[in-house]
Length: 95
Image (cartoon, rainbow, N blue to C red; front, side, top):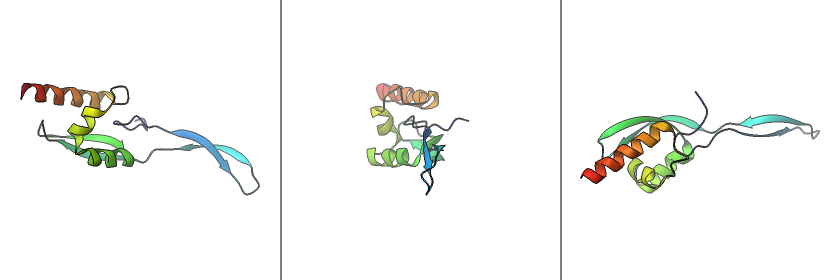
């Protein structure tokens, strides 16, 4: 399982550990991923997604999963999140 957020596309970054003696060794900065269950109001369904803590705050700020996905760019979303977004758009068009 890759260490990439399903909503924002945020993944690992690289950098340096710097010791007191100023020795530099490579390291990885991993995203703060959490397995969460988000509920779609339009579909009336819950979805398990692996998202960062920052993305979770963004979902709350925008007013839920439906509103977040409506504004999200397609190239940042995972395949599962993109399918949810298209299902929500279909349900809203039908209603």
